[in-house]
Amino acid sequence: MSAEIVWLLVTAALVLFMTPGLAFFYGGLVKAKSVVSMMMLSFGSLGLISVLWILYGFNINSITGTSADLIPGLAGNPLSDVSLAAADGSTLAGAAFGATFAIITVALISGAVADRARFGSWLLFAGIWATLSYFPVAGWVWALDADGNATGWIGTLGAALFGADSGLAVLDWAGGTAVHINAGAAALALALVLGKRTVFVKGAHKPHNVPLVLIGVAILWFGWFGFNTGAATADGEAGLIFINTIGAPAAAVLGWLLVEKIKDGKPTSVGAASGAVAGLVAITPACAFLTPGWAIALGLVAGAICALAVEVKYRWGYDDSLDVVGLHLVAGIVGCVFLGFFATDTGLFTGGDARQLVLQLIPVVAVAAYSFLVAYVVGTAIEKTIGFRVKTEDEVAGIDLVVHGEEGYSLEAEAELVKA
Image (tube, rainbow, N blue to C red):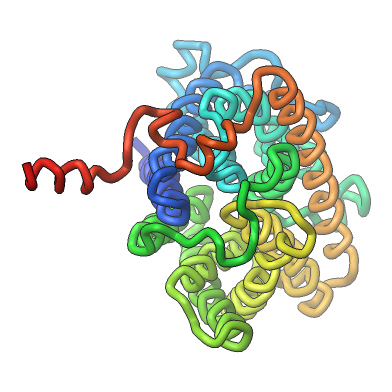
């Protein structure tokens, strides 16, 4: 077995571990009587999207696509050929790595509908959205032909606009567009479809378990090293990506806490955790294209901007429960656009010109608009037919028992037994 395949499989395992980490992060942020439901949205995504990816998702963005395809690789799933599976380990390793990205992208959206979503309706939405949005968008960004040349329209946009000789391309290493902007725009749409929680005012919803939040972010940061370095093919490239995946989120923690201190008077542990996530999101598209100094600058900017962005929902009136929009959509946009100014050799202020900025802006707008539209239409159709939101009384009481017949904590019951 080659070292490249071993590394790809190891990083795939790291990225898969991120989804339980996300479940911990989200679970700690909601109220105690909804923690099981919240975490199950992530685990449900893990089960469903894994199966859909193997059945047909991988072929939608596999190497069989052409630049003319809206959905690259729609026919001929390589995973269905047993002889190929046995002979070409790189195909299967790449498919496994891609599956983990699909899983967590879908799971990210669930934070926008915390405390009020039906589990079955969520799974229906997750499957349809992944099919119509994540699978093709990933192909737009990363689809390759047999020679390793980009085939999706985003992957070939630089050559289409400025000519193949320009050497310019959209820069998105690990999913600023396909993962974070995609999920963040869908989260905004779904928050609008389901509407506000029964109580929607600043400060009304406190995290029930802050240590669980911090554990979740620690797991996410750990897994993110696999997320960003899995596709690295050179030692220097991998080293740069790794150090940037340390520096940017660390700086984002500082940026968030500074804003929080100035704005609210106290830096919080949940703020530090959120800042780390903002920095990780922002560096995702940029990790291979910035020097470490610029990565730190990106982290500071992303942390500060996202600390302010999470407050916008109260002014604009959309209930994005766990700030998927404020973290993933906003930080994803920041990371992608930042490259237009500071990408090594091609950024506007780092040896290039405005063409790189143009290339960064087009897919940001296109992916956000497409994902929002798909999510809004699918979410509305589900809400109008089988229903997406739980009953008001169940939402107020906490939906764990109603939806899953379980409680996250049974301390009161145990106390009663002790008294008896």
